[in-house]
Image (tube, rainbow, N blue to C red; front, side, top):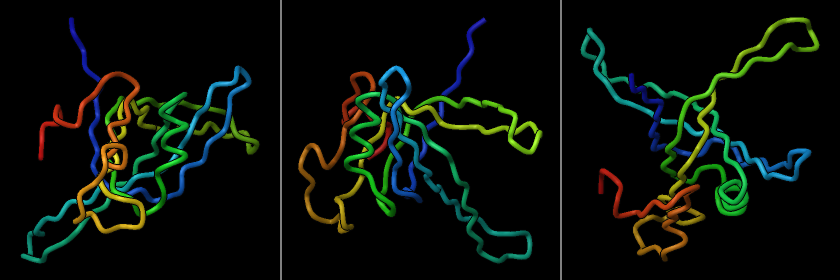
Length: 139
């Protein structure tokens, strides 16, 4: 039986990316991204709800995200969800669900102002595999 584990997020980067290296020398970069949705409550009041996601990128994608992403930038992240656990110093079991990114697209220029045309790299087709900006399911 087939299964699917895929997540796609468009939002604002909430923390500057942090890059480190594994003992084996692989680059890993983590950052948080916020995606918001607007809705109307039962009493007719407009509300906004924001969900925060922890994102993990590896190798070349990690290096590129560390170099070009920063807090406040808009980005598209595509990947899979992974939950990991560990025992903390307090003796408690801790759990974290993360997005393991396979593709990250930079949706605006550094420093804001996404109304100007973007060059190919700033527009940001950065993928673990081959992904083209034209292949996205939205404009």
